[in-house]
Length: 123
Image 1 (cartoon, rainbow, N blue to C red):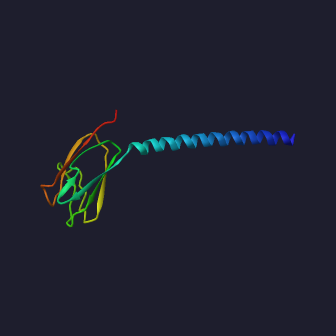
Image 2: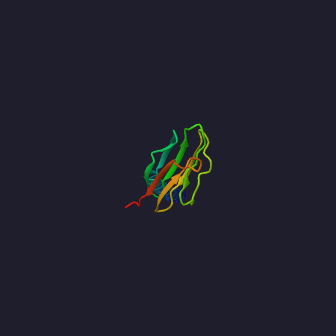
Image 3: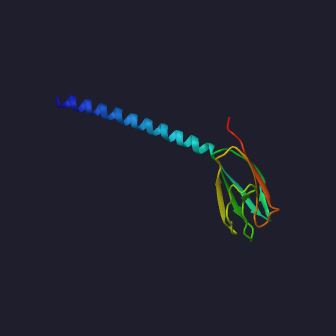
């Protein structure tokens, strides 16, 4: 009788471990699929320009501005809905994309510096 109980318990434990491993694998695959679709787009600030100055992004993406100039800059929405704050030489800032809109932005310190991004919906 002891052998049968041990065998039955071992089968239950094995089934539980297989189920847990399968669930863990499914969750890991789902997280990986979400991570793969989201991208970080780099915009360099150099020679008083945003490069690239136009960009298409998707909801869930992130835009990262990196200041390579010796002077501070900002990335500020023309409609003032968001502002990076001051980005010092060698500094950076990020913006998570959450809306389905088109945005134009500029540098508050150097208003002739312009850029834009368009948010496109995944199909």
